[in-house]
Every structure is written in C-alpha cells, then in structure tokens.
Amino acid sequence: MRKRKLGKRHVLELYRRYLNRLWHICLPFGLILLFLWWQISFSTIPIIETSRVHWLFAGAIVCLAITLFSLLTRNMAYVQASSSHIRLVTPFLRVNISYRRIRSVRPANFTNIYPPHLSGWAQRSSLSAYYGSTVIVIGLKSFPISPRVLRLFMPQQMFSPEEPGLVLLVPNWMTLSTELDTYIASWRHNKKRRESNIFALTS
Image (cartoon, rainbow, N blue to C red):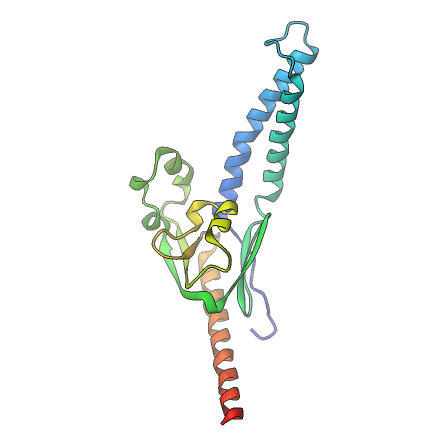
C-alpha cells in the first residue's frame, strides 16, 4: 500500500446510463431537425415552409454535438481511491472527498435504496437493469462542495436519499469496497501515528 498511491478507476455505471439515455434522445431529434433543414433548403417540394431555416440547422448541430460528446465521454466518469481521499471524476466535475468526511462505507442493494414501487414508470424503465445490483453507499459528514452543485452534474440516483452520502454503482463493487476499506484503514493508522508523535513531542 505504501508504493501504490492510487486504486483502480471504477466506471460510474449510473453516470454512464445517464449519458446513454442522453444520446439516445438527442440523436434522433438531431437527425429529424437535419432532415427538415435539408428538405426546406434543397428539396423542390419542402415538407414545411419556414423562413427560420437556420434555427433548424443550429438545433440539429447542437443535438448531434451532444450525441457525440455523450458517446465519447460516457466511460470517463469514475471513482478512485487514494491514500488520503476518494477521487470522483466526471467530464465536467472533479471532486476529492477526504477520508475525514467519511462516516461509513457499506454495500447495499440498489433496489432497497430506490424501490421500484416508489419510482415513476420512466425511472423504473431506465433503472430496471440495475435493480438487484449491489452498490457502495458512502455516508458523509458533509459534502466537499454544495450538494446543489453536485446535483447539476450527477444523476439523482447517485445520492443517498436517507443520509448525506453517495451511491456508487460500479462494475466490480467488491474490489472497490476492498480498496476503500484498505485505504481508509491505512489513513486512520497513519493519522493515529502522527497524533501520537505530536503528543510525544509536546509532552
């Protein structure tokens, strides 16, 4: 552990689902707008008549750009343990959560955290693949930045509904759990040793 400063990068499955859902929506919408722009601009018999054809083209470009971005970055969101903190990374946000802020780390069933019968039809449909999966719940004393800011960049299901904390769904939860337990135990041991050394010097 002394030589290994960083753990494995664990892809955040819920964030990947969020981006997958985003490009599935944006791609057909962008193609429809692009088709309408082409019809109005170049077809001899346009489907609709409008003088604001440039807005259709701009909308199509935006939708297709979001689609491309989502496809390229859907695997870039990850969580990674280190010797002093947990690193949470998304394409737009990078947050370090000190072990001082962590109250508990425990495995849980995703279904128990977000029960299907309490969710709407759309949410149940998008989350159906994850029901029954084991997640890592990290209880926090406080967030490193405002939860409102975090919620702008992360899906709702990545937050614990019962306490301040995060719900981490990764491909291999056992590896992440083991890494967190090891790193946190090592950090606490080093912290006690430093405190003992300081006490010895001041006594």
